[in-house]
Image (cartoon, rainbow over all chains, first blue to last red; front, side):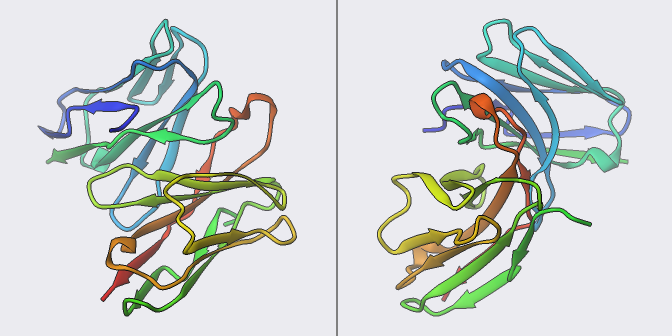
Length: 112
Length: 116
């Protein structure tokens, strides 16, 4: 059983559409990180959020950390084929001291 | 590029053989982590080092697994008497060490292990 539940598991959309990926848990996290992973490669860090209610923007990507620091969302505006990949959320609990707990990931496919 | 480097990228071996993987972290990072990822899953934590000290090991890390970081720089992960279930992507990550451990982790491209 994963500590972090991601939804949906798979998302296929057309170029130009918007999408949102969710990451939920019953645990409180001291920080939460979002990664994107492509086949045969390691996860690439997109953002770290640490404060409840925090919103961070990275070009067309918007990341939000829940007020209670138990959940997070990633919103992509006007998706492009280059956004295709496996999006992973990973949290660090207050007693884990560096150990990341990952969700199973959301596979996003953006078709031209 | 001075990112995390892992070797080899791929390893195919017969069941029962021993294998060793190497990870070179980002040079100024004093924390180094090993994770394992199987198809359709996110990475699972195996162990981590602060400098040369191994501070935590997951219950996933059976007696057949051993990790070292002898001089606080590169690390090796050895699996003895490999089994079919060991087939996975083994990922290494590194970070700066800080209070609360909230420093972001940067990953290498992994070693994909296939057991025949």
